[in-house]
Image (cartoon, rainbow, N blue to C red; front, side, top):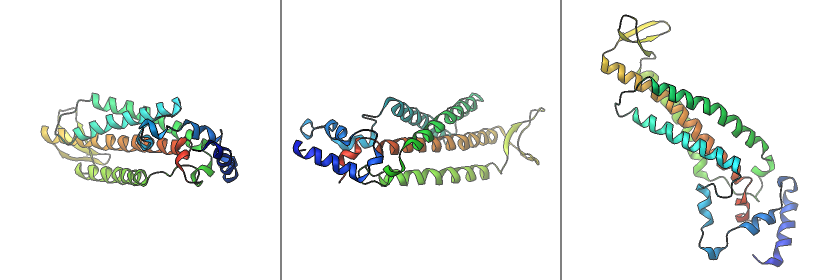
Length: 222
């Protein structure tokens, strides 16, 4: 960028949205990787380059948790037997979720509302919006399909050793050992599916926060 043009560029941005910035846009212009370095700035769309440490940590905790829940979720379709410990692992993910999402919401609320409509900042990619919608649809579909597979009941082992599906209203039916294992896998699928969706949405929201606050503005058309 022409150095003589920088002051004009800076003042033009401030006139568009003076309340939107915590620091000068000139910072982002000067920090933008030079074209001669061979570094493609578009790679930052899927990375955490230049993110503040707190936001980067939140991104990777959410991403790795989503990956872990996705692995468990996929295993439920393989016919593998699940020990009771898997539910403890999922409960740990649930506890982590109640740490991650309040932080995500706090970060989101700190983003000036003007940033979301200003042309100065980068646009949230369409694929991220579609992915968020698909995750929400999957959460609902997975829940109702899994509940139907288990006849709206839950697998249980009675004191007399019988394996059954039961609801609050009473016994639904008895199960064989194989049916009981399948019903348990379906229960794991419900919980892991919800966790996968919510951690995945956290990743998308954190990335969107950075797009609306970070150096993506250096690529915007003013």
